[in-house]
Amino acid sequence: MADDYLVRIGKLIRDARQHRGWTQSQLAEALGTSQSAVNRIERGNQNISLEMIARIGEALDSEIVSLGYAGPMHLRVVGGRRLSGAIDVKTSKNACVALLCASLLNQGRTVLRRVARIEEVFRILEVLNSVGVRTRWINDGVDLEIVPPAELELDAIDEEAARRTRSIIMFLGPLLHRMDRFKLPYAGGCDLGTRTVEPHMIALRRFGLEVTATEGIYHAEVERSSPDRPIVLTERGDTVTENALLAAARHDGVTVIRNASSNYMVQDLCFFLEALGVKVDGIGTTTLTVHGVPVIDTDVDYSPSEDPVEAMSLLAAAVVTESELTIRRVPIEFLEIELAVLEEMGLDQDRSAEYPADNGRTRLVDLTVRPSKLEAPIDKIHPMPFPGLNIDNVPFFAAIAAVAQGQTLIHDWVYDNRAIYLTDLNRLGGRLQLLDPHRVLVEGPTRWRASEMMCPPALRPAVVVLLAMMAAEGTSVLRNVYVINRGYEDLAERLNSVGAQIETFRDI
Image 1 (spheres, rainbow, N blue to C red):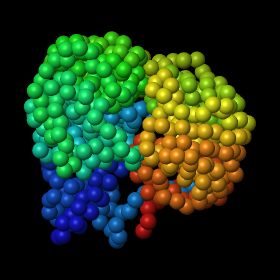
Image 2: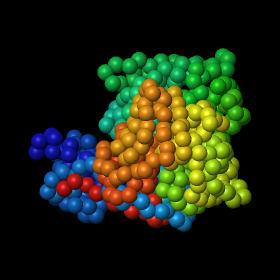
Image 3: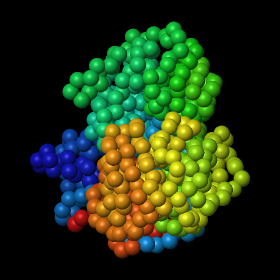
Image 4: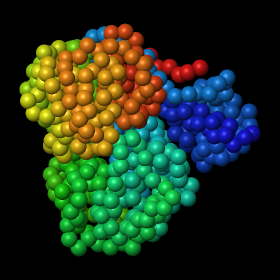
């Protein structure tokens, strides 16, 4: 059998396994084989008999071999429908991937509650499984159990999965405590232009990590050292702060991190580290003091909090479709600026009394949004590090501004390309003028119209296009929505539960 067919069959098996919600270890157990064998099959590196294909298909309740090739997933959207009822916010994508990386610090058993079942998480799990970490979904597939091996097998790392997620960069912090020399594939993820990893390197060098990059690989060497003064991050980035925290957690001493992000995923990581026995002072501020523990070997059970960006997505869905919708379990601390801006624009909303998330620390509310006559904001919309307007929430203001009266200037200064993708809304009747790669002028109100188009290659602009399709009378098609599945769990089905009409399909 030709190698390309092995690769294609491997991808089909991987997709079917993920659709079932199984890890490689669970499939291996069902087949009576090893996780490493399943990993080789899915990567196309092992000959596979028709009998084995049939057994895999039976185990996964999936027809692995059929006429044609399982192409990308698309969405067919019947727009112009009002949403109603209530919808819950899922746990944070960015917190979950950070906690999966942080599990490498722990020699004991880690259980994460209500983990987001999204492509980004699946990619990290594939990487963890490939290097010997045992993971399995428990409690009817709701929670995730992680058990590390005594020694990681980094030479067996699943490079394809690693290259499809930018989160792989957060392996550097934990791994520098586990080995003196290792390699990692370049980080991938959304197509948002050039994003340098140098701020990560500046922070991690203080712990003795040196990285050289050649031919798509990070080559890391560690000569462990102790930071002799506070680490000042050159950018207040979320993943940069998380990497510094992960390195400091098992450093035998006190590490001070300044200009740290205090965003939601960083706070969740700090709460998790405290559950591992690492003391962290200054949570929620820009100065974190970490009292490291050289050996972490504990069984830990932790519940990551809800995702404020998903909450903003659902809020925008209600606004754009002129609907009344209750969004439950909103982490209000991380959405207050956005709501303040929207209230000035005329948003009709109210919220419940605050109550704690399952982690006992994050403050939640139930938010009800009603149809509103919006006016363009006086000031431009632009992101800032927390507690400013969240960088990932900026794209949703493009769709919201498009239904408001007047002109709104959106300045997305963080990413090179993302503002350009927002102009895809023009295909649906929007009037967005690209002033430069970072600034878009939005003219509202908009009479949305149905269209068929390819999904933008960046997560949040892709969801913004989907929301506009929900508002447009007629039937729209959004093709190749893998990028949406990277960050949202069952988004189409959940929107359908409150009145949307979105059908998932593949080309025959």
